[in-house]
Image (cartoon, rainbow, N blue to C red; front, side):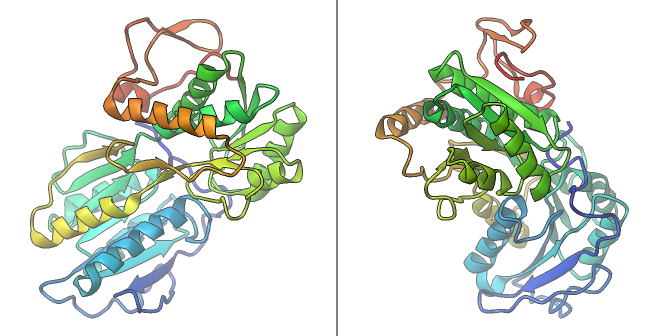
Length: 378
């Protein structure tokens, strides 16, 4: 399965140094070092009733999106477990040869559970897992069904929240033209675009989603340019697919509604904010770290959703009408109880070919490999 982090973060060079922070509890300060150095403050052995846990990030912790949300999850673990955990993170780690050494250094530093939050870290994580059976390795957005016993994957059905965000976008659009800034047209992003378009067309069958691909996960300049281009093409609602809030800046300049991604930006864009699909990483991370500590950890390929609370929508903005909120909540309840399958057929692709027959749906594995865009997307 190719997924979210198959590619190097566009704004980082391969020579970029990873930085490290270590937190022993809520009151501890964060320090940094080069990726090759031991984690600052993490060199002393953890007590027998505590555990060291590490996170490897592809971006900066202040990116306002993907990495920031993961780091909020790390902080949640530190807050809940207190002195029972020492958490370490390394940020700005490129998806190349360097990550293997970063992971090995974390093992040498005594970390017993390691989370890597980018798909491109997968090979290095698996290699280390094979060498260190006493360490748990969890790969965010990773490929399912790997047999390594101390290696697991985790992600979520963000397509559910994207569908709901599509409803918000269509209801806010006067023209029916919705713009989507896409980082890469890989299966994960494609299924997110499709879900948003299906949600939009559920309330406006004439709605269209126009896509601009920027070939980068985090590049505020390119994201802003893509959003400006979509606005020029007649889109009057802008939707995020990457990590920067720059598309929101473009929307703000034209006073157009905006659907974010990864984080709640309502306070920064109060006049144009609709909502955003977001992740609740904290409880998942806590469960994994606690189970590794108490000896009950079990290998799994976790795929969260709206029902278990892993996926969610950020709070609605003030421009979302009461009727739209009620409709979205109704659809959300149906997704959770299983009466609404967002990928139920019939579905056609954007060339008119039937991809999902009436009475059929898209399986979980097929969602991970989705390579076609639905009707209404261009």
